[in-house]
Image (cartoon, rainbow, N blue to C red; front, side, top):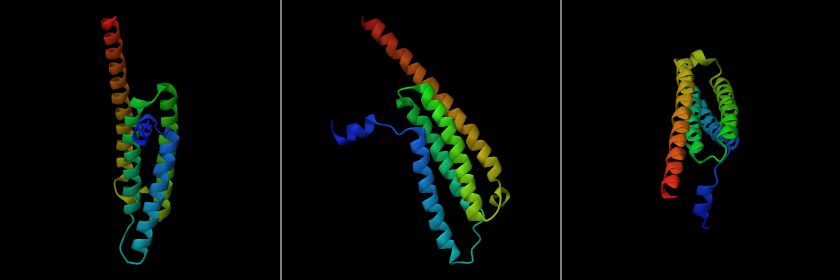
Length: 145
């Protein structure tokens, strides 16, 4: 088995995905904070935008990896906890780096709500896609036998 095939077969758990994205978000937040601290520019909304982007990225990738998960129930359970953690940690980072609450981020409260709604829609779509694929595979095996 080649390295590429090994990577394709192994997926990260939702907790590992969340940790990886939160570390990436923290690094980007620090770089932006350092870059803008040398200037007099206003960056109150930028940490909220970065955090929202990483939450949306987590929602999309996490929902897609549901297709490859071996156990749907345990994956979904971990996904909900990981999503809640990503929301809270990214919001905390944005609060810390913007030096203010979500109101400084403009309409970010609405955007976070929309991302949460989109996450559940992504999960439902992928869940039903997986069920349809499993049903089609069962029908194929029954038809061939």
